[in-house]
Image (cartoon, rainbow, N blue to C red; front, side, top):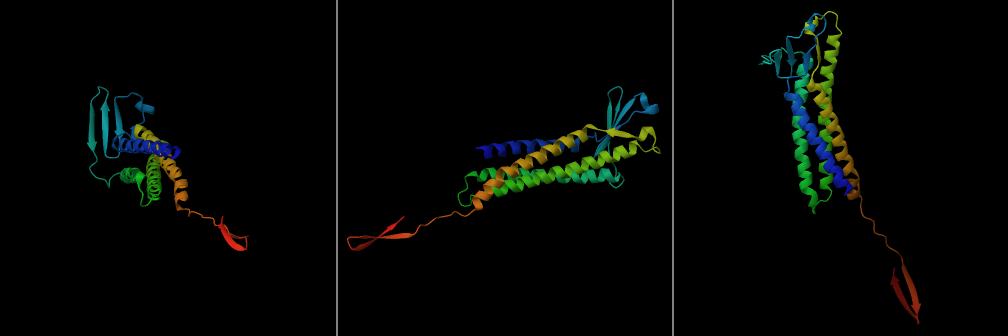
Length: 217
């Protein structure tokens, strides 16, 4: 019962983390304009995402433009885009493996198949979370380096957007959920793999009325 509860908890956390990956990937808020120095008067807000950039006017109107060329983007943004897409696809694979492991609950031909599938799904989710964490941290490091660069103009400096916080939260959920799935089935897999021991006792010979009688204990 405890193992089944851990599996359910791990699947809930990983699915929530995978949804967070998609939110972080789609929202155009990885970089937000930093209003410092002469830009203290806010007339428009600039958002930069993985796929497009948006400008929000003070009147509430928003204009978004899809990036014309992927090769023209900064290196950290290109890497973040690739890592986030791979993380999303790995999340789909992990969910499919988790569903396959759940369907194999009543497997009788190979009772050790479910723990192996669940453990593989947990490892996939952990890898998914690590890839997203690398993408978010790489982007955040580039923002910090540009913000403290004295050669860059104030209007070109950026701050952390909401997508980065979604990415950090999603990566934590994926790593934690994947670890729970792996740990919940590791002991079960070892138990199924261990061969059963059958103890045999010796044969004692008893002599009754001149006849030998053998009892098996």
